[in-house]
Image (tube, rainbow, N blue to C red; front, side, top):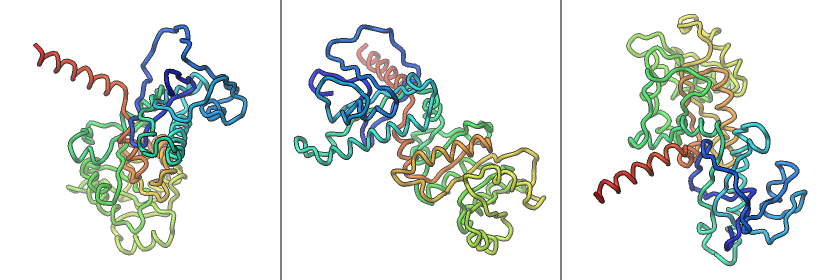
Length: 333
């Protein structure tokens, strides 16, 4: 937005700003005001050209602004599909662009002031994700309430808790694992966290267990020697069929049921915490969720935790505002 002119093809977001889902926001079709630019694109990949005039097939007639305050993103109406990862990747690239131009904006040297503040996303899949993605610190602080294990059911859309650091990662164990659970830790390394998960699942004499998976055979050998009472196996996080079939190959003492998949999955895979790891991390969580149908997944990833802190369903924002209005009216009366 520059002056009174507005450009529709998008508008933007802030580094730590809110990502608001607006899947259920609708409005009547109206005539286009004179102060609105419409940019025609032949393909979705032309969105960069449409916003910043970088060339390509997008056609435009006015001066192109380099900064936007809000991005409204509705890819489903353009592609015909609700593409969760594509939507998030566009939003992520949009923010990255503003970080880059903010550093070199001579008119406003204060970099944070040039960042957009909000992304509004119209997407059923993003709505679903926003309602089941939890920020671990907010859970431990009591700001967010994580449903207890006995109230959750196994599904391909499980609850996801995003953590950073080994301490926070392990603090989630008593909140997510109950005796009798069949648990998998993907990326177990030498097995220290796997042991704690195994003990929680096997507590009170229950037949639960945790299998630790790691892609490195030498690492798995070390874990087996250190903790012979806990099952470990070589496994690739992306080969979900391998993770499922391995449960049946482990000692029969651990095969407490014939149900495929796992009740809880912990994920500690390298490369999923950096700024460029968000899409890959969500893709892995989606693959594990669809294949194993757990009730809960806990991931150690800085970028996923950052998303959990910013992604908010519109229904939550709306209800909060309505409550504040009610309180305000009550005080006035």
